Length: 116
Image (tube, rainbow, N blue to C red; front, side, top):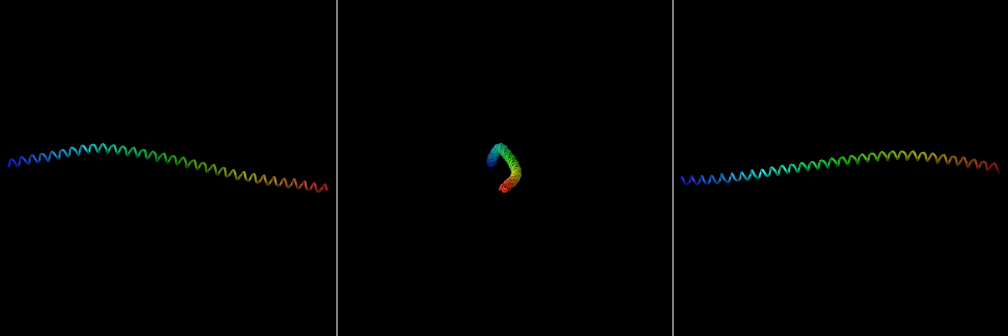
């Protein structure tokens, strides 16, 4: 039995040694994985930061474009108003010129009738 007990001890020692080696490998791998995870997290944080920065820049650009469009609209409305005022002024002047011509030619026709 002593021989059986010795072989069981040897077998147990081998099993324990195998388990120990597996645990050591597992912790080495998990240590590397932790470093990899840290690098992945760091990379993801950088990508997220870059993405947020791009989004902020895009929103700022859109806001600037919207502001420029709003300014252009107000300028165009002001120009339209000025165009209408100018058109009214020109129509008034044209009407006045036509009236003055009628009066002038009317006066000449009257003078021509008087000479005959």
